[in-house]
Each structure stands twice: as C-alpha cells, then as structure tokens.
Image (cartoon, rainbow, N blue to C red; front, side, top):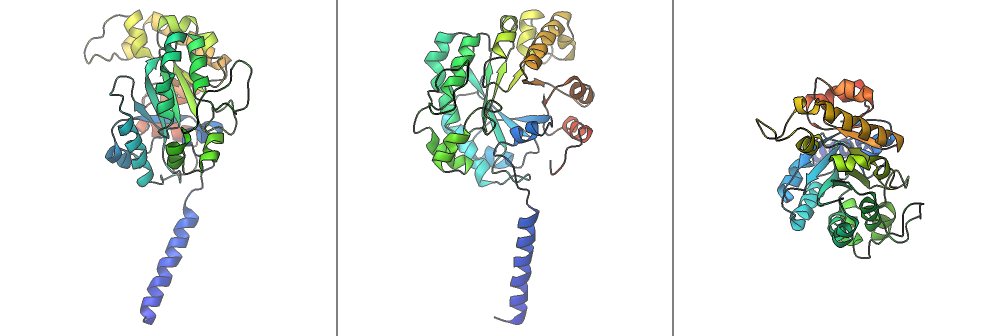
Length: 318
C-alpha cells in the first residue's frame, strides 16, 4: 500500500475514534425516565406503523414515542417490526439504542374482571420490547393494580399494595434483543420506575372520565404507576357534549368550568401521589404549563417543545 493510502486510513481511524468519543453515553435504556429522573420535563410524539416507520422515527427529536393501539389496529407483528426498525436505524442522536416507546392499549381500566381476562394484551405489548404502557379509562383502582401486577415478574421485589407479579418466562426473548441486553438482565430491568429505582418501564393512566375522576385519589396511589393524565378529549364527551368542527375539540372545551374542575382534582391527586402529570402543550402555553408543574407534554417535535427545553435549560443533544 502506498504512503498516501496509509495516511488516508489513519485519518479515517482518527475520525472514527473522535466520533466515538463525541457520542453521548446514555445513563439509562429509557430516555424518558432518564430525563424525568434529572428533573427535566419530557415531550412526546405519536407513532404508528411497522418496520419502515420505525426506521424513520429513530431520528425523532421527541423524548418518547406514543404508539397508538387504543383505536388503531391491534397488530402485534407491526409493533414488533416497528421496534426492529428503530433498532436498525439507531442509535439515536442522544446515544440511546432506540427512542423510548410507550403504547396506549385497547383494553380499558374499567373493571377488575375484564382486566384479569385481558391482561394478556398488556403482556404481549411489553414482550415486543416497548418501554412503557398508558392504560386508558383507568376508572377502577383494582383493575389498575391487576394491570401493574401482570407486567411484573414473580421474582421482582415485593411492595406493599401489590401481589406477586405474573409475567412469564419467554416474554424476555424478543424484548431483550430490542433493548440490547442478555435475557436475564432484561428481566431485572423490565420493572416499573420509580417504584424500582433501577426499572426501565414507565406506566401511565388516563383518568379520562368523570367516573375515573371519582377514584383519582385511589388510582394514582397504585404502586408502579409513574404518570397520569386527565384525557380532556374523552372528558369533554361526558362533561361538555358532542364536539364541533374537526371533531376533536380544543381549548374552548377544555376551559369549560366542569372540565377545569375535574382537571384540578386529577392534577391534585397526581401531585399527592408523586406522579408526573401529562397535559397537552402549545407554543403559547408551554411555559405556564411547566411552571404549573406539568412534566409530560405533547408536541415532541414542535416549537413548543423547543421553547420548553430552553426554558428548563435542557443540556446535551435534544
């Protein structure tokens, strides 16, 4: 090989080494937990689809992806393909193997018997390698408790208020590959945070009906839940009536006195239970939301998120 060729190879090696040194080193698998643990609010974006959509979303600037399965098709192959796409297009700009992914479920937290019959849905979703689940219509505290227990392994540390976990052997196989961990290490980390300080799973509840609000103080105290939201879209169906225009409602519906009353109650319950509160945010109200104590906002790739990150002096790559 010529001298010029050797010099070129040496230059490439130096550049690669410099690039490796500049790559961020994540403290956690779950980027959302890493930020919340540091006291930083987080911003999410929506996600759907399979492998190609996952590859595209690996570059998201959002702090986590909310993968919608409540009203969309419950397609487990598509979800697994999405997670593989994230891995294959990674790592992220923050050095994480994938963005964090939290899934909304098609099963609802309305009834203990229904949750016992359907917790397999939550288990299937976790086995796809996601990093958390948001349970919709969390009306019954006992149903929420069963939901949490279904996602914990039997050997997980026992906590008052929770029975032994029932997540089974084999659930770790695909999920551990997505997380980039040996199966045994995955099973130790696939536990709820902040209940388990070393856990990498973030669970949330949508207290999104007046019936759910009546149990908000009990539901938010179920061990293993990390965040709560008040679901103004569904709340407004009960408290305001049919929407007009686009069909999704908006700020005028949220400002209705009955809506503000229920939001105040759910926010207070979340604070009392040391849960993070999720609320929609826009460029006009994001600073006020953060000052109020909202820690999870919509719009992970919008000017509102940029404005919020600047306000809280977010460090490192976004």
